[in-house]
Image (cartoon, rainbow, N blue to C red):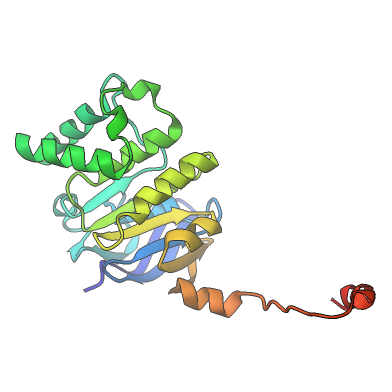
Length: 245
């Protein structure tokens, strides 16, 4: 059973067609990069898959749950990281994750163990007692990733998780996501091709609300990569070779 499946999924806001007949299948365990420029419909797609907004028409299933009919049940199967996650700034990361665990009904022992596990996974164990208000943008994104994993989701939905980070912060967040490989299905929207090449197994490309490409990463690279030629010769022919190239 696919982890994510949509059929002719459509969302309009007044006269604006944000998503136009999306047909998409994501197999279980895949790390999928959902590429597209700003305004392509990536955030709308993720908000539909989380059940935060209702589709205008069409259907979607996440972890086997039909989102339109079972939004409460869906919450137990997914984790969600918005582009700009919100926190209680006076809390520490350990306190915040414990709070999220309470929301999901974890016991005290389960919350303690899960909090420690996620702080280590995201590289925040060393700052577990620091107030969130003093965190950098990259640290906040990693904490957001941790909170999205508290309930051990089958499907993790990430909306532009590294778009506003500096190179160091992006590297740390991508490494945390990469460590999830094999534990859940990851659906990550982005407009940064290099990040998709680095950690994703599959690629979906969205433009003007329409899916224009859906492929395995290696197949896409093989199809569109430009050929590279290496030419050896005497130095006095270098100018001619460069002119020909």
